[in-house]
Image (tube, rainbow, N blue to C red; front, side, top):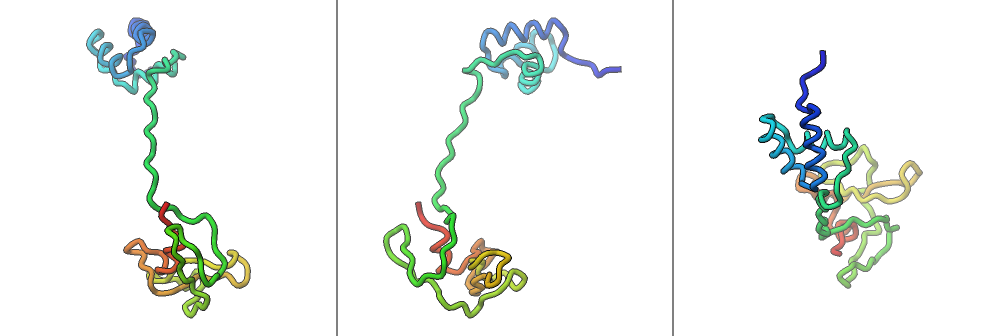
Length: 153
């Protein structure tokens, strides 16, 4: 036994007629609900339209909203250990060249800087490890590396 359906031939014919008039799916759902004394939702109209192959007029689709640009971006590259790196706002910062807290992946703690040096899986790979970071506060890097990784755009 099949489940009861609201889509009788009469309702589908009216749906096609309303779609031909380029009405939005919300309006079509309200009209069908009132005319046939049934509950038709906007999504039911969209689904039936798609299953029946009824084309959607170009003006019906809602345009996508433009995303706002993000204030910070993460650097897409890793810098080798330099003494000085230029920053987007024009002044230079001093990068650490000695790493007294260098550690491996399993040695990281909540307060360890997660800025990595070297290639993963190769000898010599390590994390900065400076205890200035705090993951609970959302700071995975020490101050010097945070200025390199997150730059104002």
